[in-house]
Amino acid sequence: MKCVLFYHAFTSCWNNGNAHFLRGYARELHALGHEVVVFEPIDGWSRLNAIREGGSPAMQGIPALFPGIDIRRYDACLDFEEALHGADLVVVHEWNAPDLIAEIGHKRAHGAPFTLLFHDTHHRAVSAPDELAQFDLDGFDGVLAFGEVLRQIYLKLGWADRAFTWHEAADIALYRPLPHIERTDDVVWIGNWGDGERSVELNEFLVEPVAELKLRASVYGVRYSDAALHTIQAAGIRHGGWLPAHCAPAAFAGARATVHVPRGPYVRSLPGIPTIRVFEALACGIPLVSAPWSDAEGLFPEGAYLGAADGTEMKRALRALLDDRELWSATVQTGLRAIRERHTCRHRAEQLVGIVENIRATGLSQPLRYIGASA
Image (cartoon, rainbow, N blue to C red):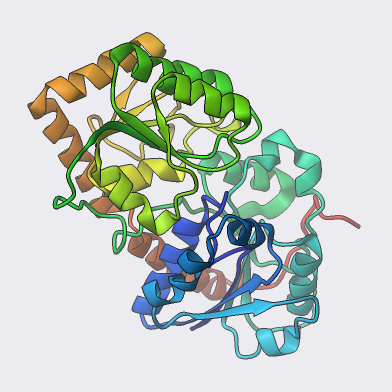
């Protein structure tokens, strides 16, 4: 197949946690023998912010990490006829502009022969449904939802058997154990502080345990306010700033444990959807302790990570991992096995090919009007 993928950003991962998976499944589609073309806007907010933070060298190195993938930047004058020429599969990620989503859907609805899928990896369906309604999905053949609970929302919107659960996963070509790197930190956390929507949780499950246990710790990410920087620095935690996604394995390798602190909407309204950091950490062979979230779909077996209901349990779990070599090793091995057996980007690429084949074989490739689309 010729696969044409529209992302908000491929070369930039600044405040773009989706970059890991979007890059990874593109890599695996190519490895399966498919032609892969990726389009990203030249003025995307992730790319522009990365440039402002001096990230041009990191972005320039991305194509070399994904040989064989044709990466194209476009401006307001994108020629859709040329971009979509010969496509068999087109996947449009939800961080794209509504106008672009509508235009590609229009092409499909008016006879373009490709299979067209919308890829939703956000909590707006429950946290801001009005934003979801801005997407004109008339003409799309289906939706790839990154969790069963999100798929159920699309079913209620009238998508019937055209919505598919398609979880994120680990790109194990990049995210893997690096045993040659010395573990100089006790704890590492990779994540963006954001707009304060999880400040309380980050203090309870990261900052306070590290401070009270007197651990060596580093955090990486962007959008840290002055108050957030003061908080972590007062706890003796080093802030490493923006960490390009492909550098995360080295950061994980340099620490003995990490923590998972999901955002509120995922905990309250989207059970069963972990953040990409869970897949990353387990793939890199670092034990993880998670703040509360519901693994409603049974993605991970018992022992793949430790759970902590509150800050006290987080301190207890971190101390146990750091002091008990057998527990540490067992957690690492269980997590690695779970990723390699079930949650790699190769698994997801093969699933995607199967979804496309199913749509075509069952005659579902006639676009269906999306009830929530704008008129």
